[in-house]
Image 1 (cartoon, one colour):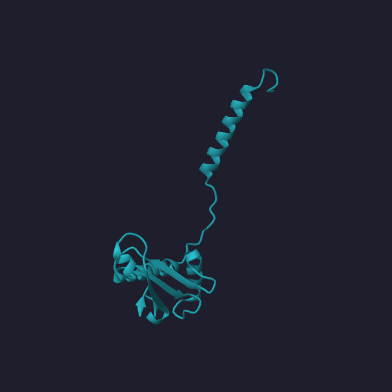
Image 2: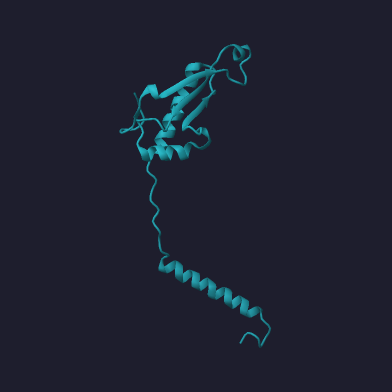
Length: 140
């Protein structure tokens, strides 16, 4: 069991890891050893996630999700399988933790009396400037 928050924990059976060959520097090691990790987590079929967290996770993950609802995380930052496995798992945990946070409700605010007065004062000053630009006799 992988604990994400106090309320959410994911069973390790829901996560599928596949090792693939990594690109980038590493010489002969890159060609011989599959160190990169492709982590797959099926969001839609997961019984561990509450519905609201599931919906936020789908919107947060964006292009990392397939049409079937599978989240795919590629980790190839490190040169070892263990390092990349831990990196992929940490990224999954961080993503679910962000989805578990409830967004703050936006409450509309009204302009203060001071801001209304400043706005009207600025409008009045601007009107006076424009009034002074008119030829004499037309501004009356």
